[in-house]
Amino acid sequence: MEDMARLSLDSEEEPLRPRSATPSQPPGGQLQTQSRRSLLVRSASAGPWTAHTVTYGSRRPGRSLTRDTSSKKRELPPPSAGRSRWCWCVVALISILIAVASSSLYLATDLSFLIANKELSCRERRNAEFPITELKNQLKKNIVGQNLAIESLVHNLKMFAASSAERPFVLWLSGWEGSGKTLTINIIKGVLPKEFRVQTVLAQLLPGSAYNLQEKAMGLVQGLEPCAPNLLVIDGWDGESRLPLAILEQFLKSLHLPEATTQNASRVLVVLSGTRGGRDVWQHFLDLQRKEGGEMNFLEHDFTNLSLRLQNTHYLASVTSNVALVPFLPMDLAQIKSCVVRELLRMQREDVVIDEAALARVMKEVSAHTEFVPGSDPPLAIHGCKRVPALLALVLSGSLDDLRL
Image (cartoon, rainbow, N blue to C red; front, side, top):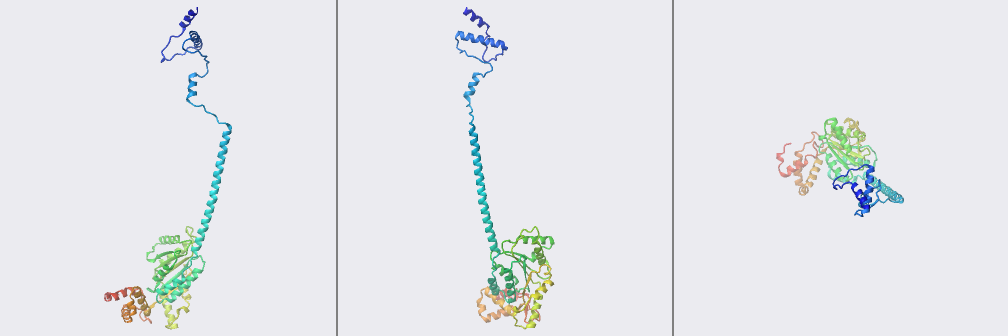
């Protein structure tokens, strides 16, 4: 009976299909009945398949096994781990803030120290002493026949060095051609300490248009050194040219413009040089000579009135009132001889200087080719000592006959 029952059940099973084929899913009730029968038959026949209970709706054993063995199960951290992590973050953040605050404090201290040192250095450079004594010695050694100009220059420079005025101070070097103005400027530049800032303007190179002149003046203002005394040289105020006076006026105005980058510029000394006013200086000199005689001590005479008069005559008073005149007097025959001796020493021709006869012959040749003011007594050289080096070179070379004045 059991065999018949087995045969009966086996006949009701589905025929076996190839593994590659996809089985069609029977209806729910039929599938459940077939599964139960199949399990009973396999259990009764003790076949190779192991019987197990299938619960529908649960995960398949194969899939569960695959997931459990192919990947590690994630372990959830305990609640205290999150709190510990937050604590470490807070500690790190506090450490960073403390480090930043300490760095800022040290940086602020360093900046304060640097600023204080810079201000101290700036103050020391701004108060750099003007080498008055050295300048006076160099002028007396190299400038011939201009005792009045030297004393006036030294006196006014002492006043400039001692003053703390913010306005630029103008020294007006006025005199004839060849009287030593340019040489004086070069000596001033040579003795100045390295702290001084020097700018030079040549009148021959100044632009003619007002716009370009204003740009040039603004460039001079921006070139000033705030932490040191400044020297501005305007050379070439000759004849009727108004460009040097115009650049001075624009420069003084530009100091107060909003776009000026050096509002707190240190002391500014302006040297305005040229032959402008030289005739007036010469006339004043002749008047004093007639009044006081040939042997005069020019240091006893006050040139203040002459300075004020010349400032009004040549329109300098309309530009600035902070001006001092440095008068360079004409050169007479005795001073031309001094220029010859100075040039011979510079050329290292002491043999001519020592030999009085040789010096007299050289002096005779030089004076014979020097132009003097007609009727002047003593004779005044029109070009001063300016042509002495060229004349002396021709005399010593024997080529004086080729010179055409």
